[in-house]
Image (tube, rainbow, N blue to C red):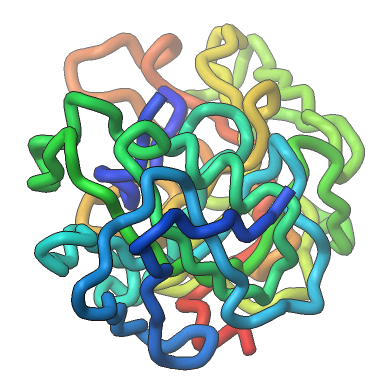
Length: 303
């Protein structure tokens, strides 16, 4: 099972919060709406985009501070400064995005501005090309190498790279013949597949420890940690070195994580997946242990 990447930021993926001073003849745009509302950005007439990164906290949150290396969950809207064209936003999709912050996984402006912000904040930023996509721009999004960009970002939640606490209760009376799983909540589990284990013929979800949070449902963004082995015991994938991942439940592209629907947040789950037709049942079947750390809808639901 390969590492699952949430493709919710096609135009943001690129290689302490402070408002920067405006240059002469420039003015930071304004944005309408409360935290969670789809914003409308207004650029004042007869103003030029600043040549340096500018930012402002439109709504000050009271949540924890975003730290370098966190997985950040957020809603966002981006448009070009000059022609006021919205090139991407998560509000219309009604599912937030999740991405590592401060580690070069998003454009430089986001790494610089959002680390140090507080969860619950709405942040506005004006991003010159150097802090965005550079001289090459982003052809897919219609962004030229000379375009200054304007973003509004609502910060919903943060997850540290490791050690997210879970409240759950181990389930007793598990079915016989399953791979065994060892390890405490908040740490990477160890999966052992018995030599005589029968590979699964159909996908199956077994809750190993039941959480106390809301149940996963279609349209939600699930925050997970996972590790997987095939039925020979060989490791085939893990998120534990990179940190938590954001995956949609019931998204446009089918995923094994869709099987988490109905599982309470905070649970540890064993997912057994059969081999594809024509492949060896032992090497093609997979046992995945998933820690369901959290569930998120749009920012508007977070308040």
